[in-house]
Image (cartoon, rainbow, N blue to C red; front, side, top):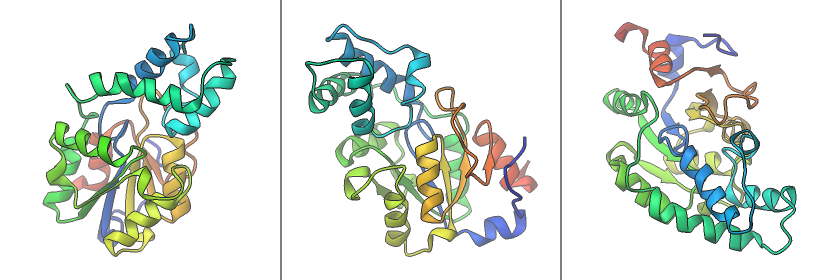
Length: 231
């Protein structure tokens, strides 16, 4: 375990007023479903992405992914909007029936709530789908605020969503501790002025997290680090 920067444990948790969780791939184990949804849509045009090929798109906003995938796979008869609509057919049928948490994520949410931190979510998903996801996973009681990509002008990796989340919580970005699993999300939080902790998953582990203050394999490791007296 090698955090990128030094974290002062005593000043660390005492200095934060808000904890912000990304959802897909950080709190919820959904990246595999997203991978399958893209291939469901692409199969209608005789194309597919291997797991290795998908790694370059993992964690990115669907508009960015669709805009890149179509020329990358040389599909001439497909628009970004049609590709996204088709993948959402798959998501509607498969995303909400059996949502699973990332390892240690639920325990982390419970711990931060028990310690009376203000806890929020900032996700690249849109509001309606996110609300359905939160309800299906039983997470609504843990978040004081949920901010989605369609509530800000620019999605991750731009800082808008974290700037907006902090402002709605009434705290400064530097008072926010953010958990992210992808480079675009971590970069968004960092550029907003938040303190970023990276917890990559199998789809994002090769991405650049040099902007993060620390990187952990899972939430259990992170919580042991931030709350060593509870171990």
